[in-house]
Picture: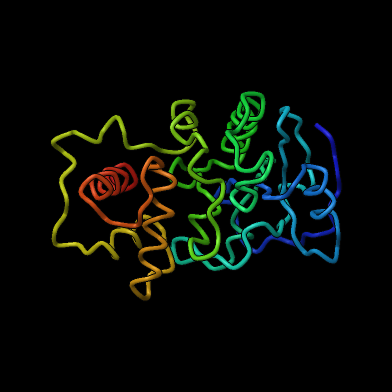
Length: 235
C-alpha cells in the first residue's frame, strides 16, 4: 500500500457507520491522486485503488475525508463524518465516447477492493446494508460507481447486500399500505421531496440493485427488490 497524504481532512464528528464506494471520474489515476492531494480542490478519500490493483492510502480512517459532498442517508447529512470512502480509478460516465471511458472494473482492482472492504467492515462493524454507492447518498448529482460495478460479486464475498437469492421467495410481498417514497426513505434515501427527486433516487437504487435497467420506473421487479432488501435490513 502506498501513502499519498492528502491535506483534505478534518476530525470526525461521529462513529463510522458507512462504507461508500466511488469511481474517480478522471482521465487517469495520477490525475485523481493529484486532485485529492491538492488543498485547493477540497476533496479526498481514505483510499484509492488503480486499475492494476495498487492501493493508495490518502487519509487515515480515524479522520473525516471529504468524499461524499452534499449528501444524505438515513436522515444523516454529515455523511463524511460517518463513512469511509474508497475511490476506484475509472474514467466513468463523463468520458463515455472517448478512448477508455466508463469501462468494466478490472479483476485486479476488484480483488484488492474485496480484501480492503472486508478489513474495513471488520474494523468498524459495518452492517451489510451500510455498504453503499456514492450515488446512493447523492442521487441527484452522482451516478458512481455506476451500473458496471459488480455489487452482486461483493455480496457473494460477504460485502453489502443483494436481493437475487430472495427475489422470488413467497415471503417477499409488496407492502401496498406503504408508499414508494416511504420505502425508499426506510432504505436510507434522503432526497424525496418531489417527483423528479424520487425518480432520480429510483435510478440510483436500480443502478445498484438492478443495473441492467435503470429507467427510474418503480416497476414490479424493482419493488420486489426493494421489499426484499427492507426485509433483510429489518428482520
